[in-house]
Length: 261
Length: 354
Image 1 (cartoon, rainbow over the protein chains, first blue to last red):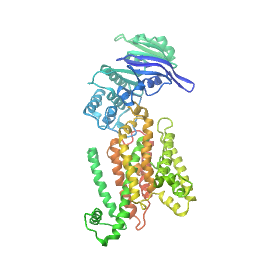
Image 2 (image 1 turned 120 degrees about the vertical axis):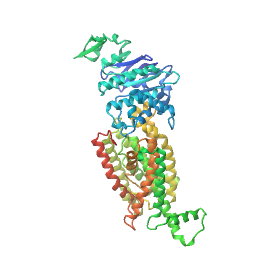
Image 3 (image 1 turned 135 degrees about the vertical axis):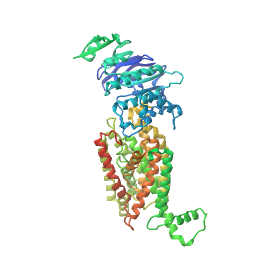
Image 4 (image 1 turned 30 degrees about the horizontal axis):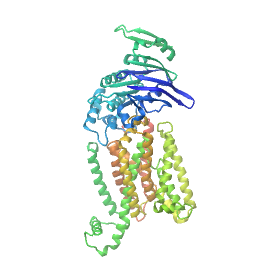
């Protein structure tokens, strides 16, 4: 499991993260919710081990993140962010292979190649594997990046060892098809001893896909819910400064949210 | 067609072309040699064929002038090709080359400092360092210049083309001002040397140059081969590379050091040769691949080939005089640079090579 313990992050006198402790639930789709400037990205960056908190620590299982070498950490967790542009044209396959970089020295093994193939299959980009990344649409590029981070941590055949997939607003700027597709694939990886920790902006979609929810406001986690139904509407209204109403989907009774100012 | 070849086959092809270029470059010039003659000279040198006394002049020209020149040209081309690849990878931008980001101009300034003050007591350190004073000074100033340009152009986490260009212009101007000042205050033979050498020249190439450039090139090149994967990962951006286990700060420092070592030594020997580092990786990317595991060895080979061709041109365009190398590379390279820049600014720096 991934744990953040009493993490504080300060820039000068400004407190961006204020003594946050979070236990991400293993094997679950953890969602961090909150308005702009609440400290979500900072919390995520600290949880990935890429950003050192001013005070506090991060633990994966019983080891501190600082005890991992950069390479060992890269085999343990992967990070997908909003959008990655390449200044130079690489083939799709070569971009996905980068996910295996922490796993091999000079030349990729057959297994590395195999994982690349499977990751491409999983995101549905096998047909484009020899195409240049720079010629893809934004949605397709994000699929390739997803395949890359999957290849990085996806051990479909190895002894079970927990791994973490961090998603930093991965669906921003994607159309609805790509959004749903990306979150579907991310949910699928939960079956391979992976824990997903995601920042999502679309509350409805977050509640639809997530298992555990952390609501942030002003650098603190103000609410933790282990069921979409337990996310209190009043709190969402206050934190996001909107009016929210919840209705049941006539088709299956699932809660739908409507927002207005 | 090239796209179909494997990396190994491409290296082989480049290597064969390089051999042809080397032979051609050794043969052509004010004093021209037939392949048979060259073979005879080499054979004599290794004691394989009997010494022919009548060829004394030709032998001297071949071994004292032509051969070191051919080798220095090839090595310098390889240095600039690899350096262009490393710097474009570091800055994540295809307009970058050692001449743009201050590496060459800094090296020139460092070398000029030793040229002018080296014999006097002004620089006491120059004496104990002996013949390494010029490369060492070139390295120090060159490293500082490149580091400043990198820091300025990445001030906001991402490389900005315009800050990069402006920072490069400013640092290059500063170094050029220093070099200009030195050539102004220097006594005549030194001053002429500095001016000539601002445009790059192989006329002064000797065996010591071959040894120095060769040694530092081989060391830096073998070292740089380790960075193929990291440079690829860096294409994704600094934070993505970090999440793949690359330490960007350490990588950047190491890349600038390894790059500056070879460029500083080469520049100290033959002067500033612009645009080669720009064109070499560009052509390789367009015809083959942007994978740095491929680009690093390929740019060494292709850089050497290109420099031989340019040097042959320098010798035969206005015989018996010689054109400075920098003039030819600028005439070819500057339009390429503008073309890349135009495509880049028009395309919003994305989707560059299509």
